[in-house]
Length: 341
Image (tube, rainbow, N blue to C red; front, side, top):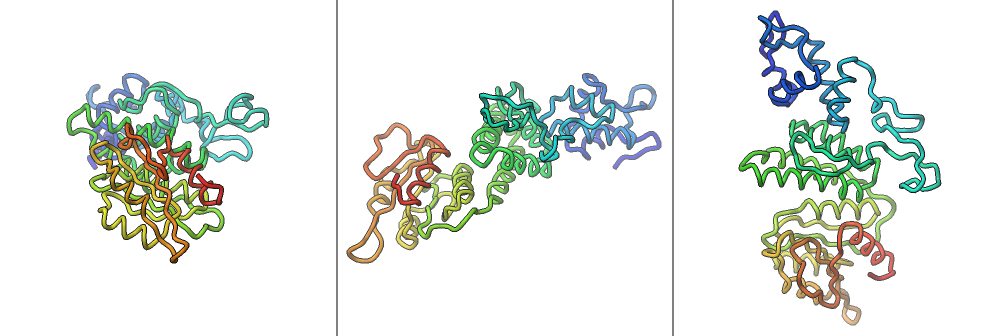
């Protein structure tokens, strides 16, 4: 660390906080988040108090607070509302007053402020009109701030449940990072990798509720398909509902899938395909025709085709194609409780 008698250089502070020097200069020019002293009137040197102010700025923006509002709170040192939720609320979650007609209806349920949708982006990512948590998650991802990603993802699942957290927080942020990566050459690859890892970690931390039925749901990507996160979200949703699953991950060979179906006797088989080039309808029909069990009482698994790769083809009998995570979970829940698909 390049400490001097006058303080720390901008480059050193940027490395410590995981933000770019350009971002620090922008915060100084736009919001007055700058060093108390400058060498020769020009060169920025940051004191420990200055760095603490920047750390608070980073913490607030990672929580989804707009930069201008976060800067005011950081400059004055006052506790921001995200630190002072009302009685019974989690410390990191501010609430709006009771709002009939929204999620709380007429029950008096308090609605998280973070649940409101706001336009904007996180450090240049094309987010559009999204939940406030998306903006904080995007900013933390661009900063490569792993601890902040863990905290934000954990809070999103706790506040909204797995399905809403996936559909309205995780997936939009992942898509924004992917679009940025596609439009900027090789930039943001590290952001996508880090965010994907932490989303996967958050999904695997979902804990089961209640006893599980005996027949599991088998989850697999078709051969040549490497995208697993949506399937991991489905596995987490099944776990959240107390339904057993077996996750086989990316690019499962046809022979291995066939062996897994016969050995596990699943209630359903979910096949994920991200692109039409990987969708294998012949394989899906083969799995649907598979049978297992004792002689005279053999059964077939329900096959569910998940992902955009399956679009555009007629679905065969015994095969379902849900529109999204919520529908897939509802169908599999009914199947596991004996009420059919």
